Image (cartoon, rainbow, N blue to C red; front, top):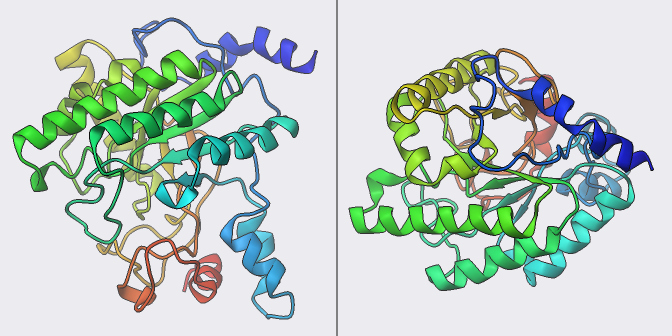
Length: 327
């Protein structure tokens, strides 16, 4: 009954979450969905996140309490890729645990072929478009009718300078196919295409990339994943993207901002810069639909900066600890 009452109120929640720049009815061209926000009682906190696992395994470490209380206890996204094994089982287990707790999980699909073509630190992905289609179909099917938020393939629309036109067309086809899978198999999931960050691609160009990848069929787009730009910088960029979408393509979209590491803003570096700080989470403001932790604070960007010698995704407790205090 609790979920039924939330579902009945979903359209009201959805209206509240639209960016101020969106005209009524302009946010999507697909049929109206129930709001996963209204179907749940808050965001899911992953008890098995890397900072939670580290704190539990190292209770005597002087950094453990701070990491547990300031990072591990916060809702954040879980990333899924080839390392997840059976993707249907992995996603199903995670979403099932969130559903049992009446909480909303945030998931990131990160397995597109040619992943991180320009950055190079997180390369990999499914071997072929056909393999990716099977993988993302199983991902969506595992969510089913349960509520979720899914960010689809971070970096994929900012990497075009490293791809040929044929590769761009192939990638856009995979992204459009992914959106179709969630539309058809996960009706209570809000999907977001990733739109990079304010210093990467101009807003008008990113609007073109989003539209080419099928943004009309997404709930929205995401900004600042694994980066450090302030919320104000990101909302200005998101609003500029929406202005370009509106003027060139006749629609706008809600957007979310990754605030996991933007408390001190950016120093111009993207790969494990020092002196960064965790930011606000699960709040609205400045036109953003939500402020979320999409990158896990303390997880490395790769063998660079203060994470020298580490692999992308490896949890670094000293980096996490310093990020709590901003030094």
